[in-house]
Length: 251
Image 1 (tube, rainbow, N blue to C red):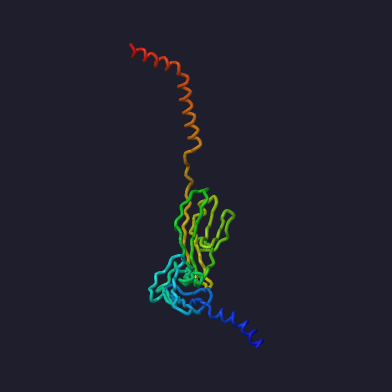
Image 2 (cartoon, rainbow, N blue to C red):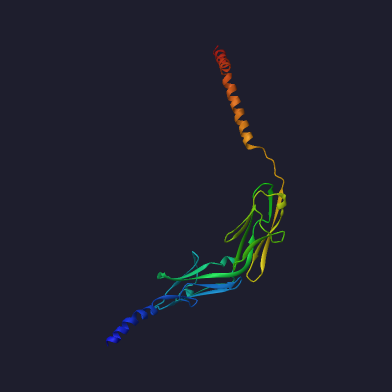
């Protein structure tokens, strides 16, 4: 009898855990990820387990609540995406128990698509200036990013600098010359060997000679001072003329 009581003491918490109110997302009792190809359909199913009465479910896509029918919200609910887009990549869908929103389950979408490259394709620059060529990209799976010059691999000269972030490959050229005029190709190379490219045309022209701003500012200041000093030097004459005019008016 004592052994039976001990056994019940051990099993009761386990039994309670098994029968406790919980959610399954695509049959998983943990937050997970769903991987699909671009343009595929996706279906996400949320189910209440361990319930003794009807429970209402609500959905969120990111931070926005999803509208579902009342028939699709009791105990079992499904959200369908007819055609996945690039914008769906990385988005999380969360299913919550309406009566207790602390009970929830999430699933993140992973959409596979070839690299997409963006950025202005023609850059005009003056000799001696610093130029930046920015190639923005999106890719899943991740791609290796690098530059070609006139469609050939090249070693970056000392005045060239390359920076890579999670979504931008940037080439900076300091003190450009006409020799830097070329086509710079942004390359996204996938693990399977396929690549996506975007060509950026850099055209370096003569440096334009502009008016020296400092000299203009100095001339304006000097001119203003000359006018002020001139008026100050003539103040007595102006005062006399002014006073004479007043006396004439009075008479």
